[in-house]
Image (tube, rainbow, N blue to C red):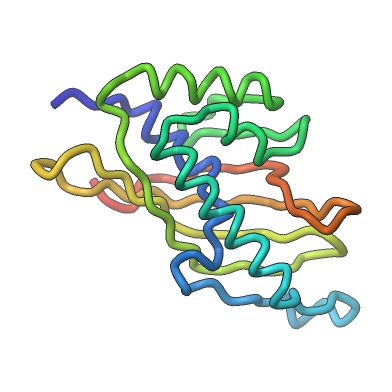
Length: 167
């Protein structure tokens, strides 16, 4: 089965919100920043719901729903250095990904979620990509920054893909 490395490199871009969907996320405030409070459970819950929404939208091939998880000026930077800036570019990118019938299914595993400043969270994790039962799962690390809006919701400001965890 043919795979598209660009598509796989960019998938983690939205993965960042799955913080609590796997039950592995921990609020980890920077101990050196005494003025920064820990992330409340209610915020972790909201981030987890957004992550779950991403996985559902991705696995249902809904590019518009994925783009809506980003700030209007949000960005995705793939491990190959390609940048998708703004919701429209993000939506177009995922529409292209979903045009390929072999686009994988995704699941997410957040390894850390930490408050780095007022209304700013950094999430690190791994997105797992499954293309078929005959092929091994591919895992890719990501780092995402979330921004809290005045209404209390969280949107993705930027997502940066890291090198693949598995071959």
